[in-house]
Image (tube, rainbow, N blue to C red):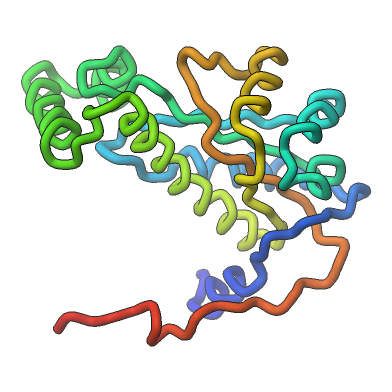
Length: 219
């Protein structure tokens, strides 16, 4: 059984590893487990507005170096490199939402109608994410960060390092991924990237604000 100390040790172990040992590869079974933790992540209304693209092709990684300035040390050395995509059309009445409710969640017509009404209210008046296309996309992209956190935590629990990457030119990076055939920009956008591997350098000291500065209690 995993203990509190096990969990805390994993979080203390995890850091943004900027360079990996290029000679060490993550075992397939371990990386499959990490991806499964991403797949099992929660999302708003369980609508899973994401896609995970594992980029192992060396030529594509080399091209990405031109626009992903935050991964100059990780793209060449990572055992596995992941692009987290978000689905652009997440309106309550979109084809994807209907697919999720019908084919994945297997809701009957009455339940679907009620759930779509709840999602519609949430999007239209509760959080106003339908006020613009950008707001709707931002809402979908935020969901991928839930999966991002779980992917990194799962890796840390397995003794595997990771580094989340937002340091990229959006338009140029999406263009490279589209040219490579791994991103349909009409359907998906790039939210964030994530590198995995095994550290080659010592872990730097972890710095965080004191707990009392970031937590308040209402009793």
